[in-house]
Length: 263
Image 1 (cartoon, rainbow, N blue to C red):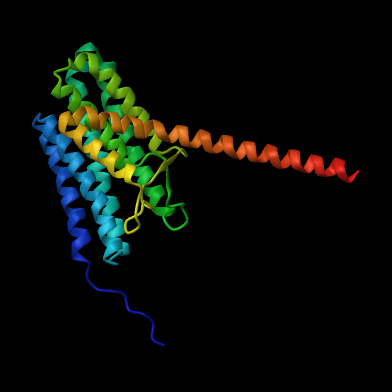
Image 2 (spheres, helix red, strand yellow):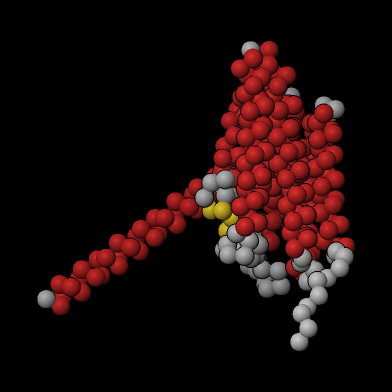
């Protein structure tokens, strides 16, 4: 039997969505440099939507490839690593730099830590892709961290909050999101959600409610959703550890009882 020849060329459809996601991330950087932070935030969120579609399209059309996996990771590093980091730096620096050189350095250091953690998180994800539990992410996903970062900036811009008052809380939350990306805390991945199977009617109502709230106040709702997802990881992890500890105690108690009965 002849060895299987490698496929020449690439699949156009999923990689087209990945390219569109990369374009949106690059546009966010350009818009941020020009001072259009609301446009930049929307571009990063559009990149997140496109990033969620390319993988699903590849699985539905059976066009997965190693090239697509690597290309997707490189695009994610730009759209969800470099773009949010630069936006954070460009948005906080004018407010904090006049306070002294320490605050100016803090802005770019936090931005660098975020970009580095995003790169490390993507590298770890690639190495564990074949063995990891698809139901959960290990660490906060980079699109979710980017969504939190840009939604904070969008809310501040949309409501006219003074950068001097909002810059430090934004840096703290961005740094927290960066550290959560490289943590071992588990987050629901949503990759195993049913696509062809029927779902309870209440889920449709919940999605409808989310769309209504997004239409009423998009930046606030996105920020709340991003914060809620970021906090869900520690809750899920602690709950899982508590269940495992309880099961371990129950097994130990059962063995002790069997030992006493045997005597």
